[in-house]
Length: 132
Picture 1 (cartoon, helix red, strand yellow):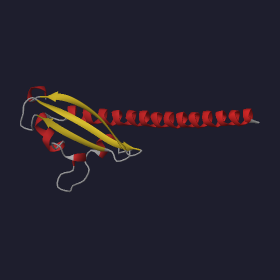
Picture 2 (cartoon, rainbow, N blue to C red):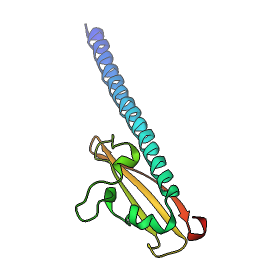
Picture 3 (cartoon, rainbow, N blue to C red):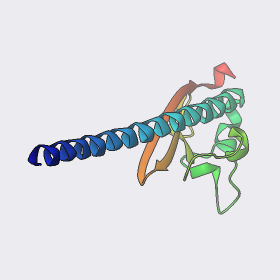
Picture 4 (cartoon, one colour):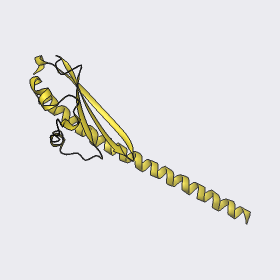
């Protein structure tokens, strides 16, 4: 009888461990898929940045404005990436070292949340008035 109890306990422990591992793998797969979507959105934004003339960069991509929103205006970045599909997705473009610099580095950062955790990916490019 004791052997049977030990066997059942071992099976229950193994089943709980396998279910936990399965759940963790599902979560990692979801984050991986979301990262792929985030990188696609960043690629779309970088294509828009590179297609914009140097003189219009600050007007179209305001420095540090989340989602391109300035003064309570509309989200101007969502149409550029085909709409936001990630939870709490937010895109910010930052001009380094400042908007008057020539050349300047444009850093595009995307953040989103999954299971209460914030994820972030970013890409950057250098632009100058000579390359426009």
